[in-house]
Length: 186
Image (cartoon, rainbow, N blue to C red):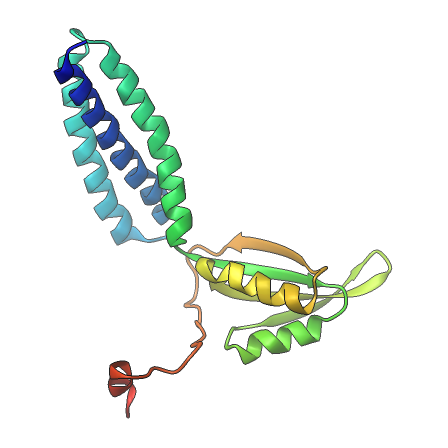
């Protein structure tokens, strides 16, 4: 096998990872109602795809191995796109906490931290439970679950994607200091 074919195959593989990763994030942006982001990512995705497909179609007759690089790039791009999206955690979620014992304590703590908190009374089998709903950024969910587990280790958690909805009030964990405090003065 010629070195140019291998280099071309690697270029196709890498470009395909980029374009499919961008496509995965674009689809998630569409679901979350981020129209401008989806438009921009769609432009990038199709631009890369056109370059890749024109290269593949031009070389596939002389070297069918290019198709394998193309397919591997596609499969890898899906995985990379999901990993990137999980890392940046775009969008908002609704965290539901089902508390068997310390529902009011949990709600009070999350309110103290600055989150919007809604509570509901419920019944599970033959005992009373408290459902706590917290609209939050997806990136805050792990932190909120950790706080809840410290207060009530046996609490049950459910998350749901909010998508497009009202603006979520994000808590300010610490007041601005240093140069950022200058812009916050009234």
